[in-house]
Length: 362
Image: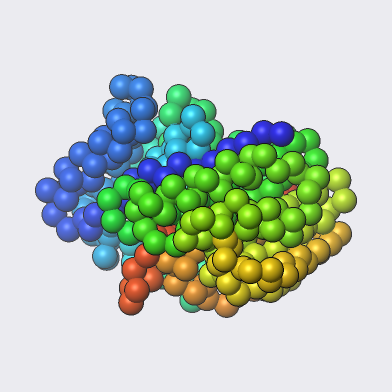
């Protein structure tokens, strides 16, 4: 059984780009995050260059409400830095040119170097066409996601499993989060477990780590409801946690799901929206409460969106048949931390069969 887990240490920053000095801030923070993520010196320089190109693009083309979002994460020994450009317009008219024209000019001309340096590049822009941002769902007119991986070693790499997965996360304060993601897989099964431990900071992170140790012990052959019941026993001396467990059977094309507490999920099964049910309570203090699992399938296509309660409720929408966005792009489109009661925020998107290469605009 293979294991990947999201470390408690997360780096997150959003920088509004209004003047030249803001681009310097974006470059400095991108470089700092890359260094903390143990990128090589060359890769650190490339992260700074990507941030610089995207930030200067806002000033050069006078975008509205332009900003840069930086998200640095570690999975096991693998690190990633997402450099994201967001704005309210005017949009890029010729997206195909970013990929295909030798001498692309005009709005978006500086993106060719970003495409070259990014390990995965995704974009949506405008209101029409196959790469348009989803009206009523994406609040931005243009969103560009450049994912960079330390030594170009992709975290959450499920190429052979045809699974495309991405995470966007923000701690409440500092760099330590009580949220967690643990992924276990073999040739047949892929299990995603999203956790929101009670509280914040290092104490909550320790609960999440303890749950991760228990999850590593539980084989993929166990039913998902048993996994939650087992965690109930091992976490009895903690403040507990909320959880959502989803396990894909690639052979049978089915999905098992079980959850407790305030971690929410949404499934798109062959493009049909399904909101799975879950139990109320805190794992570690259920006192014999029954855990009930659901099973779905068989199906040909699956998308799962799971988030902790630091995320605002997702808008209702049908999954467009003509939108094959990468999971990374979906994650940044939907990411919206709550404003009234701020909390650690984690949003996980995964798709099967997934889109694993750069999003190519045709």
